[in-house]
Amino acid sequence: MTEPLSEFVAARRPRWDRMEALVGRARGRVSRLTAAEVRELGAGYREVVADLAYARRSYRADPVTAWLETLVRDMRPLVYGSVVERDSLVGFVTTGFWRRVAERPVFLVVSALLMFVPMGAMGLWAHGHPTQARAVAGVSDLSAGTAEGGWRDADSDKVTATGTNAGFSAAIFTNNVRVALVAYAGGLTAGAITVVSLMFNGLLVGLIGGLAVHSGGGDSFWRLVVPHGVLELSLIVVAGAAGLRTGWALVNPGHRTRTEALAVEGRAGVEMALGAALLLVPTGVVEGFVTPRGLTLGPAVAVGVGLAALFWAAVIWRGRRAAGGR
Image (cartoon, rainbow, N blue to C red; front, top):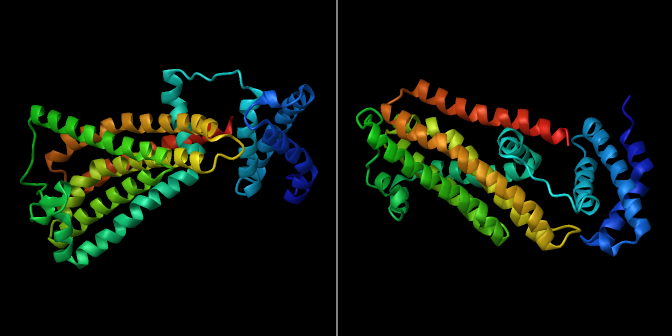
């Protein structure tokens, strides 16, 4: 039977507070503690980890679980400071990347909101105010074609030549990786550039989509964007979450120094960004080889939603499972 939360906290809170105090005294260096305190920290770490495991099973949504996760995270480098984790490439591909994506869901949510809320708002505005929207679209090369009414038709502009598609795919992949890495690297500005990058890309897609739908090109827009775009936007959200995570380590390092926080969270962010960049390869392949063949709306949606569903299923299956087993 699950122990009542109030009793669980009351019985263990003195131990947690003591461990938090030791972490605070250490300030990232175990050498600042006495020998007795180091032994106490080691014994306390095992007990707090056990408490965290119980809390994850019984009180997953309660703030006390998140607080214990932070405490364990701060204690671990003090207890195992001489241990350097080196994941193999196979481990990164099968578990490591997915665990990184799943372990801080709040940053995923914030990243998604920063991109999709402006996207939706701009799409509605552009559809309702096409004249002003075309003037705005004309200031960027990325949207200038839409401003001039040059929206591509999914049926008449088919491209099936292998060489042409390969070059197109490589160019798209390069651009997508640049967007993802900018979103991550912006974390080094305390997340400011990450926020701007996510909002800009959301506004741009919304602007183009709103104008396309208003001009009667909505069917072509969805058929051209959805096959690669759902997964592509998901991966940009992941890269943005990596940048926000890194930025938050600079803004709020907790008991660690900013350098120590950046070393830990920055490594996690790099893993997320690199994994997202690698997974952008199939989006470029789809946009270069599949989209130009003029898919009808049904197959286009099936391809796009199917790829994104596979990605998020892997996050849940591999990432959450690995995080729960730590």
